[in-house]
Amino acid sequence: MSSVQTTAEADAPLLEVRNLMVRYGRKGPAAVEDVSFSIARGETLGLVGESGSGKTTIGRAILGLLPVTEGQIIFDGRDITRASVAERRALQGDLRAVFQDPFSSLNPRRVIGDALTEPLRVAGVGRGQRIARANESLAAVGLPAGSFDRYPRQFSGGQRQRIAIARALVTDPRLVVCDEAVSALDLSTQAQVLNLLAELGAGADLGYLFIAHDMAVVEFLAQRVVVLYRGKVMEQGLTADVIRNPQSPYTRVLMAASPVPDPDEQARRREVWRALRNEAKAPAA
Ligand SMILES: Nc1ncnc2c1ncn2[C@@H]1O[C@H](COP(=O)(O)OP(=O)(O)O)[C@@H](O)[C@H]1O
Ligand SMILES: [Mg+2]
Image (cartoon, rainbow, N blue to C red; front, side, top):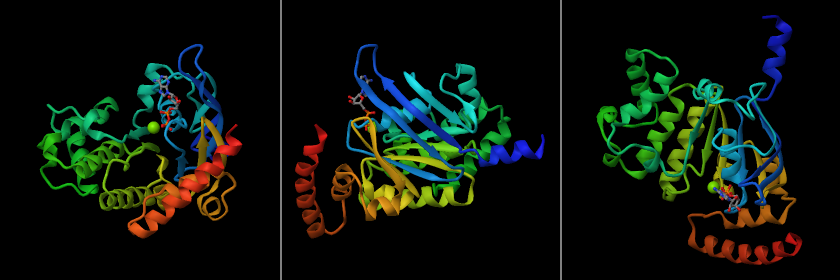
């Protein structure tokens, strides 16, 4: 490979979403429209918006779990918008997901080890290596030795989310789509899992698309953020800039809705949120 090509590949974003439009059904309205953003190698991008704004739709389109109506998805310089089943299979180790409810994606009758070795088997890794890497991955997310041979029901909600993270990372991926990955957890478990994601991403050349309805969790993890409202991008930029000086009323609504540990502060924010929500209704028309 020539050095020119190598440089071009290193400079290209890890993921580019260009003018994405997704329609459920032929005649339905667009669930997302004209959505464009990119994720650099090793970067965490937050995708925030209220319920129904199209976050999951975007995540699933990237993962190849639903058809793209218009636009393009470029991963690592390759157009994967309409990748075949075989092409998606080849990508499964590089492009992975963590969803909100890991219990529903773990087979209750199979041990955790099976869930972790399966993606490695698909990637063609030999049996001995599969078991070793699954155990390494479980240790990396802080699960006790012996977790490999236990069943999903034997773990707490926070532990199951760690298992989901271990399963996402076991293939040494380039990009992980986390869709509301901590939303079902209590605040202290949320903080632990967020810290874990940050830790695991830091050393590795690993990018995250971090989807949440909560600006506070995005602020903690993401260098940049995209704010979505009714399927459209309202604003995007460095997280610190967007939080310091939000350009869209929807961004302010999301910020005010973030839960905080202090109940007085929480009550105050709820008041602010109520006021902002009324304010935000005006430009919605
Ligand atoms: N399977 C589906 N069929 C039809 N409409 C859907 C489907 N899934 C989501 N939608 C619609 O698409 C829009 C975006 O939903 P979604 O991507 O789930 O939002 P979010 O994840 O931000 O809550 C909503 O209007 C929702 O009702
Ligand atoms: Mg969703």
